[in-house]
Length: 378
Image (tube, rainbow, N blue to C red; front, side, top):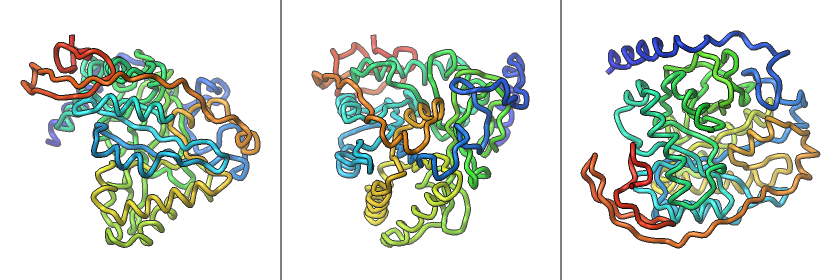
């Protein structure tokens, strides 16, 4: 397996040689809103106390009837201290997703982002993925979700690669060429205190690379939203909160709550880099104690006047055009136009994996089950 990854990295290196190698960032040339050096500096040069503390809640994988019950329970009708509804980003994978429910999430004001069509294994596929592979898995998924969930394509801005397994420069080339604004697949286990803020790849990144291959070329346009790792009870990093090794007893609500607060305070009492709370729904649903601690955490932070639970797109909008906390608190709540969903339950065959699927969508039923190379099921 390691040999396979090594060969894949070498192959990717040969492809990446066609791109200009990224140089050390020039802060005189790299200016907002379209360029930002990788840095722990607060955008706008604000002091921490004058900077909004953003929390980004995310959930990965297919959206279905089972996990929607959790989302409705813990997220719906919840507001920040400024009276605006909280934000959440759903990194949706296609297979087994219910597009009527994705439309519901969109109409609740949540952000829908990309997590691939197949979410296939093994992870080596993603490390060695070609431009064509990622175009079909990620870029084509943007058209697929917009069509079947009846949501605007322009509302789909972000990407999280399955297993957080980047394909080096190729991942960001695809994003740049297909109008995807940001990626949230790249963990940092070293630049946490102070934390790394979002940045572009016009110049070389200072971010560590826990899951190689990471980009080395100059690739303008896409933004990196660094995944600032959690620290478990023994201080070891974990890219997602549900991947930590040393954790409290699952029934100990107070211990889990303290673990969540301790990780949040690293940013809140530091340089206020966005605090990412990354989870899979199954982790909460299978462990009621952790779920209770999560809800208690949300109840706590939404009472703080300088803390805002927002989606990843909103973080990026602020970083591009930063304003101090006192101005941000007065901004109107985000707005969007809800879309209709005339739900249809469909049954279709997928000839590549030879499976039959039942799925709910907001359009007419396709001839085949949507898949790589045929995202609309024509």
